[in-house]
Amino acid sequence: MSSRHLLLATAAVVLLALASAPLTQAASATLPPPPAGWPATLQLGLADGAGGAAATRAKFRTGLRYQYLAGGVNTGRSWSTWNPGGAFVSNYVRESLKARTTPVFSYYMLRHSAPGARDRDEARADLRNLREPATMKAWYEDLALAFARAGRFKPAKVVFQIEPDLWAYIQQASRDDDAATVPAAVASTGLPALAGLPDTAAGFAQAIVRLRDRNAPNVQLAYHLSDWGTRTDLHLNRPNGRQVDALAARAAAFERSLGARFQLLFTDWADADAGFEQKIRGDGGASWWAPEDFRRATRFLAGVVRGTGLRAVVWQLPLGNTVMRAMDDTWGHFRDNRVQTLLDDSRQRVLRQLARAGVIGLLFGGGAEGTTCACDWRRDGVTNPPQVFGRTRDSLTADDDGGFFRQLARRYARDPLPLPR
Image: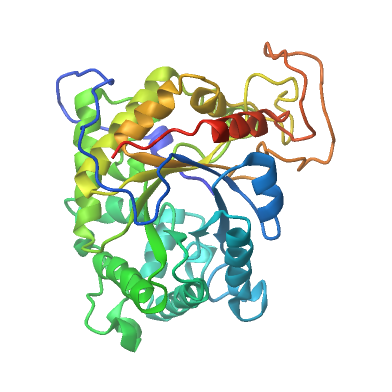
C-alpha cells in the first residue's frame, strides 16, 4: 500500500509564506498521558502474521506485533473469511497475549471494497465508497465483528489502527480542514446503532467510536495521521520550521474536527525501503532520509501531539539497513537507514527526541512485497554477497536484513527508553 498521494510527487505545492525557523525546536515539556495501560517505556513492534507470536517474541523481545485486516467488505475476501466467523481476530489476540505481546490490527478495508475497488485512483475510490450506503453498512458491520472478536478478551489491551491513508484523503477533500464538510454514509445506512449520527466524515469517525464502545471497550483506537493530508509532503517539499508548525496545527485541527475521541495517533514515514523505491519504483533516490528529515518529522509530530492530546506510534518503518553485506538492493534485501538511525546508537539520541515529541512506539515492517524483512522471507539462508555500497558486516542470521534488526531490538530490550510523563 502506498502512503504517499501521487499528486505530491509531481505537482507544485504552495507553502505558507512564513519566516524560516530552525527544525530543532524543542517539543513542549507538557505531554498528554499515554493510553491507559501503556507500558512505561517506548515500545518496539514488528509486522507478524498469524501463528508467529511466540517465535517473534523469543527472537526480538518486542512488545507489539501488528497484522493487516484487509480484503474489502463486500468482496468475499474479507479478513472475516480467513477463519470461520471472524475467528482470525480472536486467534491473533489469543496467541499475542499468551506471548505477552500487545496485538495491533491495521484495519484497511475501504480501498478494496466495491464499487470503488475498480477505480485506480485511491483517493477517489475511498471517497466514493465512503458515500455509498450499502458499502458503508457492510463496512460498519465488518468493523463491529472485528471489535466483538477483540472484545472477548477484555480487559486486555488491543489496538486498532483505522484505515491508513483514508483520513488524509478526507482532509484533502474538506473545506477549511473540517471533516464535517465531507459527505459519508452513516445514519443513512439504516443501522440502528448509528441512528442520529451525521452523514459526514465526522459522523463516520463518531460511528467508529460508538461501535468500539458497544463491542470492545478494551480496544484502543488509533487515528492515522498522514502529513500529506495538508497537500504538503514533509520530505518531498521540505518546509521550514515555522511552516512545519503551521502544517502540524492544520493536521491537529482536522483531527479535532472529527469530534471523536481516539486514544492514539499512528503515522508512517514510508511504506518501502529507500533502496526499493530507488531501484524498483525508480524515484532516483528521492526517498532517502537525511538528519533534517528526521528532525522535520519529529517537529511535525510534536505539534500534532500537542494539538490533539494524543501520543503517537510510528508505523510500518522499513527494515533495510546500509550496514550488512546482505543488503545489496536485490529482491528482499533492500537498503534503508531508518533502523540504524533509530536503534544503532547507545545514547539513544533520536529515540529520546521522538519520545520528547510524544512518540511511545515504533512498529517495523514493509508495506510492499519484496521489501526487506527481519526474517528469511527469501528462503535464501545466510547471505554475504560481494561488498557493494560500502557494506562490510557479515550476516549474523538468515534474516534477509542480515540479522541487524534482531541484534538491535534485543539490545534495546535490555535498556528500554523510559517515556517522559
